[in-house]
Image (cartoon, rainbow, N blue to C red):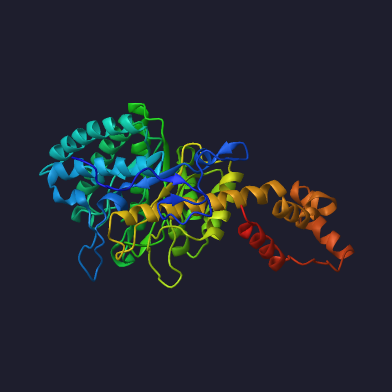
Length: 439
């Protein structure tokens, strides 16, 4: 079907001094950072939905995106999108992509017809993957767009909808395995409620757990060994979603005995919607051993909804990569740009500008985070700050040897605890120094 991004060649690294908008200034895929290349550390992925199927429409206006593949329809459109996608992936040099089932193939007039469309597109995409070397990071099923999911999918009040969603996930797991995907994500787009006046919360939570268990069991049956992931989000499109944040998702997995099978896919804008920082959600996932993958984007501090903007904040990416490095990387995950160009950025070239900006800002963040960890400035400070738990009564507390009687006796004998400053401003100045340091 031809070239879709004519006039744009492979994006090369030209260094911080370059003024070429179609070149990397900081992302040098082969540059070594701490014994691994940037390509190995960052594991970038393009989101099929925003990038290839996004139209730019919003509640106040029609579609704005100019996409050369939109001259096609039906399966012709699906194939044109796939060709455009892999041209984009190859020119950006990203190693991975992610998709929902309905991103890559249209629904037919029956579930069987839809599955046939998926089979056709999977064969088509396989050829493109072989030709480019781009891999599938993770797949998922769109269980939120169609009107059948108006009341949810796994948490629907309608058992027939539960069954339909299960059939859709079954097929999505099969095609993810066929495309050798490294993982499979559950994002509960409509797994929540609008009002408790009509909601049986216990049944919905139980059904959600049953649904996830069915997926785990079927994955074993078909030999899919990819990592299952939960993507927390507090609201949108429902008022309250059951996977509110990392802590809520972790508690749910623990309660229903699902924790051994799942990790978390943390998204920056979802973290801020939950009232947290991106770093907080990453930290909580990491210290609990469930940081699996990342949806890389950012929100707008002045807007209270999920704007899914491309990341450009080097402070956020530095603190994110700090957590990723402390996690030992993302062995089966990556940095997926779950982000969309702004409605006014409607030309095809804007897709390159957006991804280049995101890849560069994570490369800057990686370098700064690596230097912070190598120098140990934050780690040393934290170690000293909690040093009282390594000797005396603190050591007894940490070892579980001190009960309330022993602690009360200690307090009576040491009646005037003395605190020291937390030095927040000093540490923020140190962070500034590392983020702003010249490469």
